[in-house]
Amino acid sequence: MTKFSFAAAAALGVVVVTLGCSNQTGQEVTGEEVAVLVAPPSVPPPITRNHATRVVVNLETEEHVGRLADGVQYTFWTFGGQVPGNFIRIREGDEVEFHLNNRPDSRMPHNIDLHAVTGPGGGAVSSFTPPGRSSVFSFKALNPGLYVYHCATAPVGMHIANGMYGLILVEPVGGLSPVDREYYVMQGEFYTRGAYGAGGLQPFSMEKAIAENPDYVLFNGAVGALTGDNSLQANVGETVRLFVGNGGPNLISSFHVIGEIFDRVNHEAGTAVTENVQTTLIPAGGATIVEFSLESPGTFLIVDHSIFRTFNKGALGMLAVEGPADSTIYSGRLLDEIYIPEGGAIQEIPQEQGPAPTAMTAQERVEAGSRVYSQNCAACHQPNGLGLANAFPPLAESDYLNANKNRAIDVLLNGLSEEIVVNGETYDGVMPLLRLSDDDIANVLTYVYATWGNSGAVVTAREVARRR
Image (cartoon, rainbow, N blue to C red; front, side):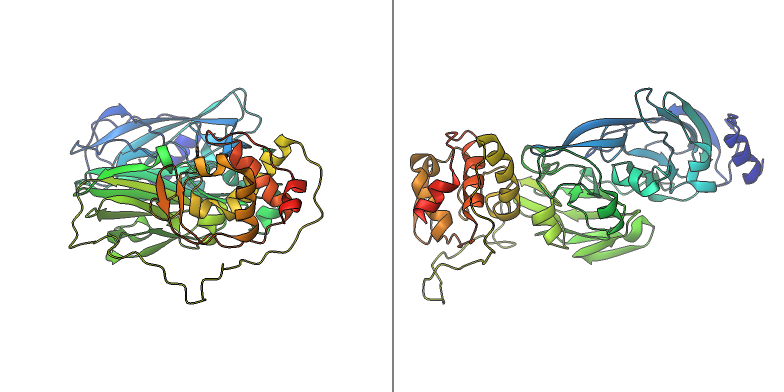
């Protein structure tokens, strides 16, 4: 059967049985299996069979409201119920029978374009599926590599921006080299009517999407999806492989792991390999495979090195590595002393004064403070408020904050340059003067007090004005 007639048969819903015959890769196709689909950041296990087979893939589209950030909800359109969609793992030479199922409670029709498919629309032409329906088409995995899949129903950009993308790996004949751990990371952008951190259910903004000005740039679909308790895990001495995609729909990713060098990079997820790479570009609708060995313990930050996206729009993940340290590779801190060439003055970060203080409820202050925290504080004190050891004190369950509300106000008004003790640990850094408005200070302190086991104290703009 020719390639054209195979595609035409699939478009008509005809299941072409090819068991026990050779396909266009010249491999014998033996048997049948149902693909194991796995949610991020996990991936299915490596393929151990030494022959091509017929693989049945069952993927469901689902629309649901979920968490975009703390206090922020969004209506996601998904493959498999999460962003990114389920990871699909097949082998070069496999013949795939693909079932796309659209839940009856969906509001929109969906389809799928798999960049691993050689055929019209990458399968999109054959998979347009209204709510409550299923579509079936078949394709052959002709080319090894890591490929993006996404919805291609009009308006295509909106479907992608709402979270409809994922990765499909076509392992080469002979498989990939063995590693200790494999993870699935995918970057994407979200365009919301409100600014970053604005609370409540946020609708999609077509205007911002057309202008390519996202409020959120995220790994795996939510702020903090790969931080704190959700951090990727590994041990010293292990080798890690990351399957990394960029759903877009607009931005190019400058993918980087702070404190690591990629031993091997499959650029654009093809077969060409480059060694000893610091940062690799991933185009929208593209992917890469990076591998690196772990020689030092600690927390390694996973970022888009277009760095304001990391610390102001959410593109931040973590790899937590445990094990013994080797001081010949990395010494850690050898000396800790004060160096302030400016003569000890508090550094100022200028910021325009906002409008006069306004009357707000405590809940309104918490919601507004969450945005102020994300934009000004999270980079140092961390999104979870736990701070960084020996550098930035924790705000979570902070005895220093909870003991004296006026002192907390003064720190934000005037900065801080003195040794303090927080939860039994000594910190001797410099808190810069941020020049926040009275409302912003009241809001962010109210948010911190209402979060992470703190006292629940409410700070008003009038209280801040009196301390100013």
